[in-house]
Length: 301
Image: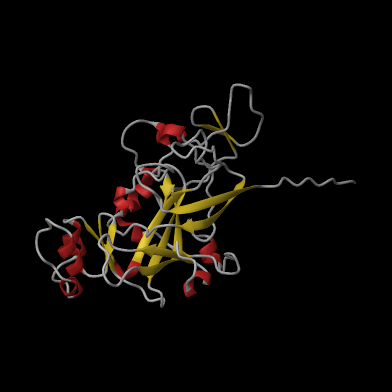
């Protein structure tokens, strides 16, 4: 992390330090990631009754016996074995967008007004600045990115002057020029140049075939699950750790960013964003749970 930069104090900027494997006479380069927009994923697409007990049954009110419990009415489908089609149950389903994450319905990050909704159309948009989740619960083993409610941030990599930069990534190294990348990595076929990419002779898909990801104009993406509570164990998901319960407000804040996010071509590799999984989510996300308040009014006649 680099703290002593001009952009470090600008809202939404997260300074990041990086360099190449083989250092050049230029030494190191400082870049910043500015988070621009966000989108909520796996928001339930139906309004349910107030109370749900038993196998897919629902009742609007009434008491709960000692053999019943509240639950997400679609939980049995989400916990079933086999391929899961999130589009059947969610608005903005991760299973539909993970291969083209840039097409998610992104909304601008809240500014100094902390996200006041500016118009009626925006407030009605699922996954807008504010979203009503309903409930979303699965067992611990199934609390994966495709079934839990999460958030995707769109960021942009910028240089010390605040200008976006296009970067090429191979394995764990980032390059501004394809010529340097091809000369630094042994065994890559061809000898492509940055100019060839700029004029369209080669495309991002061509480079992807060689294991090279393109951060066009510096755009990158971060995906994370929103916690209901922290069980203190980073390697697994605990029971109910990533579920969502109705009548709670989940206030989400990004505390830090320690790496460039995924490029559009990288994101399909992120199957599971649970902390400690095979893929890092590259940012620290904090969720503060604010339960709804039940207000009682005494009336005298």
